[in-house]
Amino acid sequence: MVSKRQEELLKLIVEDYIKNARPVGSKALCDSMKCSSATIRAEMNYLEEIGLLEKTHISSGRVPSEKGYRYYVDNIMAPRELNGEDMLKLQTIVDNKSLVVNDIILKSMEIISELTHYTTVVLGKQSSHNLVQKVEVIPIDKNNIVAIVVTDKGHVEHKNIYIPGDVDSVEIKQTVDLINKLIVGTSIDSVSEVLEYQVKPIIAQYVKQHEVLYNAFYSAFSDFTNESVKVNGRKNILMQPEFNDADKIRDIISKFEDKEIVNNIKEEDNGINIYIGSENDFDDDVTVIKTKYKVNGEEGTIALIGPKRMEYERVITLLNYIKENIDSR
Image 1: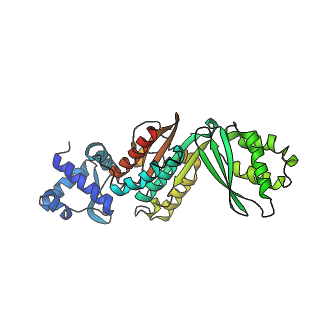
Image 2 (image 1 turned 90 degrees about the horizontal axis):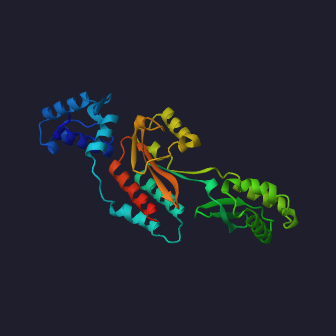
Image 3 (image 1 turned 60 degrees about the horizontal axis):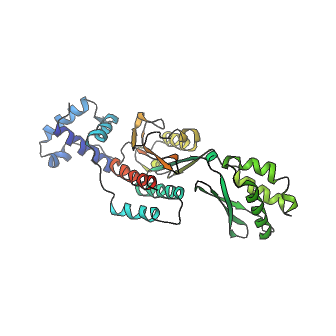
C-alpha cells in the first residue's frame, strides 16, 4: 500500500531523475515535501523495500526502478496539453494539404524525434496491399534523378537514381513511359518481377541506352520490401547518459539495424501503450511507447524508443496528437 505522501515523493523522484539523470537524495526533497530529511529518508526506505526505488552504486540517493516507473505511469502521471512549440512544429506538417497521409506520418515522426531526442519508428502498410498508380522522375542534375512511386493507397516512395551523363533525357522519359505502361496496377512487391520479365525483354526496342537505364531503375526498385520501416534518430538514444558503455552501444545499434527485431515493434492495440524495460521485446534498458494507426483502412505502427528515464507525459501527448490527426482523415 502506498500513501498519498509516498506517491508524491515517488512523483518528485521520478520527475527529477527524468530531468537530471542523477540519483535523488533526501535533502533535495525537503522543501518540496515540507518534511524533515529523516522523514523523507524513512519514506524512501519504504519505497525501496517495496521495489519502487533502488539505490545506485555511486550515491546514497535513489532512482526509480522499473516497477517504480510502471507505478508512476499507471497511477500518478497525468495527461497534459501539447506545448506551443511542439504544436506549432507539428501543425505545419499536419495542415500541409500538399502532403499525402503517409508523408505526414513520416515527417511528423521525424519532428518528434528532433523534439524529444528519442528514436522514432514507423512500421507502414504491407506493400502487397499497395498497387502502383504512377511513376514520375524529377531531374536533380545531369547525373541524378529522383524516381517517385505513387500507389493507389496514397503511399509515396522516393528513390535516388544515378544516370551516366551521356544518357539523353528523352530516353529517360521513354523508359519511364514504358515502365508506367507495364507496372501500373501491379503490387509494389511485384515490381521487380514485372521489370525482369516484361520490361527487360522489350526495352531495347524503344531505348538505345536500354541496358544502363534498365539496370538503374531495376536497382532502385528492387529494394522494396513487404513492410515499410522508417527509423529516425538512431543515435539519439545513444546520447543519453544511460548508454555510455561501448558494448551496450554496439548492442543497441545492431538491434536498430536488424529489420526482424524492428518489425517486432508492431502494435496490435489501438491505445497508446507503454512497455518499460523487460516488458518490451526490443531491449531491457529502454522504454517503447507505441500505438496502431489506420490509413485508408490499412494499419501501421508509430513508436518512440528512449531510456526508461523518459518524458512519459510529453511522449504520450505527442503520439496522441499524431494518432488523432491520422485517424480523423
